[in-house]
Image 1: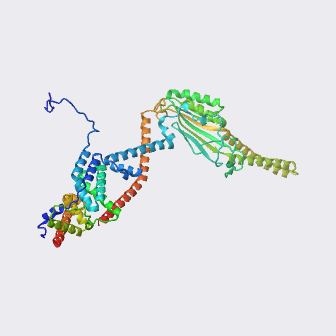
Image 2 (image 1 turned 45 degrees about the vertical axis):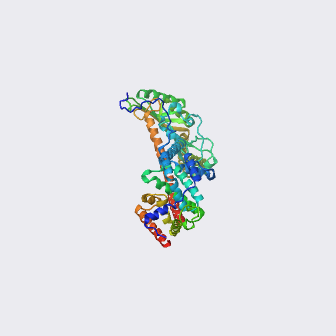
Length: 388
Length: 188
């Protein structure tokens, strides 16, 4: 038998060995192709596999668009959640200064705030900057004579005091137009008199915006501090407000004890004086008695000052005019500047959320990419081994 | 009057079809690819998996996968036939892995390559010799033979399918043919 004359003859013979599909299979495949290759029931995919198969079938551009839309929606939702849940007060910051009608309820109450847990010597405050209340971690205050908690007695000072003596003070800045300063100052006097307070000093200056203004140093009965602040808030626009408390229980208790000791000593000296036998002894006791009485007087003075601090709250009130003293929108409405502030704030939150999301997702994506690459390499090798 | 002179004359009916009804370009291209590659793909897959029933299954699965991915095909990354045969190759190799068997032309079933009834004894003998020679090649060489002479792929397409350079594919193919001829000459 003749061998192949050349490669062409070999190839021609080789082509006759080509496997051909059965006509039935070819017809069935044509039918399925015409129908768009419907999925066969025998190879029904699990829901997750089906989803993955659909994702794989998506064009890259559409897949990228879908992923981008999902990521954007996630960022928006996270931003809304963070903005609403995390810093409600901050979001309202630029919504205008606190109007008289927006006084915090805690300040409009005529009752003095109750004492709170904490050390005996502490200072805390409630601030209202640009109208938005920013309440400190321990903002509750206590007036003298109110109930004391047992935990308050565990502090290093006056631990066994039956009540807390708390000095309260406040600073408030009102914003006004220059022509309203005089009227507002009169209202301040009226409000102080209404609560039986004392005007320690006052200064009212007229003039243009920025120059005009007023300043008051006031003493208000501690029990009526809330009412007074509420009245002041109603006079004009509140630019800022700050309340502070200072627990003076320890010095009050200490002075009281010293005063009792001093009085007892005076009584003892008086008894000793009555029983003195000689002029020399009497003179000695009288000298000691004078000294002790001076000491007792000093202690009484201290006690009076402490009592005054506990019962009268000092308020520093200023009425300012000019830029920054009033809201950009005089009517308190929300304007373009506020919109820009809020937009910047929201964009900042969105950027933060995005950065945090990327910080979380980037390592996961890297790990997933490495796993996918390793799987692909292993699969390719396994396929090559299957062919070998 | 149509200033460009492009308007058809004698049109008395207008057929309107929505864009959804019109076949997309990707569908049309895939249809062309299917019609031009159906038998070639089957021949290649049958050579790989060595089982007509499995070859049908894998061929259908390959077309199905390709159809699902048709919109992701990027012509700039290669020819459509190379892309289709790459999918079929993966499907066939996965089938071989599942079965734990290797593609061996030595065990080629009789019904896969059957001799025509009118063939002469000499032609039949040459065919058998060629089949036996084909069995002496290793699986990768047989794959190249199948891609080139059963499926009709160009060297560039073969290179893309088996993931080697075009010159490397040509060299390997030449060696496989030479080896095949030597094996045939030895048998005859």
